Amino acid sequence: MSDIILLCGRMFDGVSETLSGPMEILVEKNRITRVARSVERPAGAEVIDLSDRTVSPGFIDTHVHLTMDASNLARQTLESSASKALKGMSLAREYMRYGFTTLRDLGSADPDWPTIDLRNAINAGIVQGRGSSLRLTLLVRVRVMAIYAASTTPAGHCRFPALPMTRHR
Image (cartoon, rainbow, N blue to C red):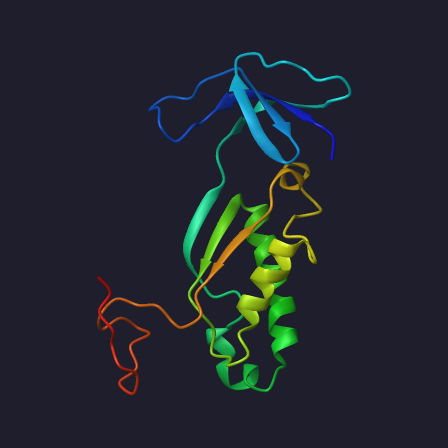
């Protein structure tokens, strides 16, 4: 992928209480390398004009279940793990379209761990965690942090009496 320059009308940086702008963002090899009022423009860089838009960092959702549909658990138990992983890929892309670039998946009710396979496939570049309908989503990849076993607070909704609680230091 070639270098990209984003021309931003306004920018929310997650630190300041006010929007800044106009700003420019230099993206080299899928990484943001510089943010300033004006950035160096490498030869051949693609320029994307977002001067009428407000740009912000990617959002993080810390509680998702990409491969588990709680409204259809009974029917879902009959589906293959591959089917669940493919549905999870579709959900990951949908999150991306809404601006989420990092997802923490808290587990599924499947002993074959389709969320782990989905995360590994995205990280290895086997499947793309990038949206195809939004131009900006081509710049970043959805990062999925998958938990091997359900994670919860003491007495949380994933607390199963048959499973021992382990205290972490």
